[in-house]
Image (cartoon, rainbow, N blue to C red; front, side):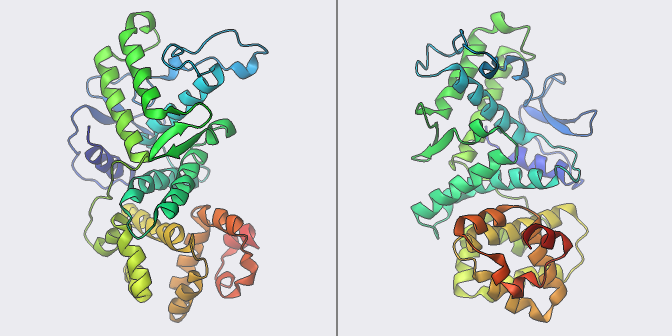
Length: 356
């Protein structure tokens, strides 16, 4: 299954682009009572892709002094315990829920943006030739942390997985996530009669859900790439989003080219939610691919925009308040933001309340 067409439809609905539905072979979006949108198998409007496993959630062993049961897949993974089994379930649900489109409110807006942003960036990293392997690995861990953190998941799940040779593994057991998820779907397909009261889809549909889950995993592992769909007037912004190398190399060769793209965007009224989202992505790309490795670059951006203080204020406050990537970088690098007065002078009240 190719995820790009499904991702295009996700973007169209999420940002109300009012485009004709994108044809997909097996899945379609449906509007839910809470005004969210969920992915459903075509012909099955009762069970969503993210929800089909909900009745299969393992018992929580943390509420039992001495858990006396074994994981469902214990024959396939003898090193697995019941605590690990629950963590794998949380990861599977988190991944499948990446396709969900939530109704945005002030309380979930940042997390929603950061989860979808991190998911998209995980698909980009392998193709970024301007970064060496060590830099790619560092950013991969960074994006995967926030992908889980902003879902959100519990601390155990947040710290239970890592990358090894571009494959996601359960760190303590060494089990490859792709092997576990494959066995998981195959088990419930093969033992459907035993669990049919807990599963709202057919064995054939389990196979289709497996295919989509495995493609989501390929994105996270950087083995498939997504691109943001085109829109008139956004060509330069999208070029830097869909090809991170161009952003990095332009910033190395002639920083003013990157700044000019930002300036041109801000010079034109942009009413579209999708256009706004793409600009926010570009600024967070500047954070994660440029400032992540050299925070002092931000001084040069401020110097360039000094002649248009309203643009500079917009850029600085979007960088510092749209997401908490910059907070993590400041802590990791032990950077004291108060030493950068030319930057903090542009902070609005929200930014001041967070950083000063």
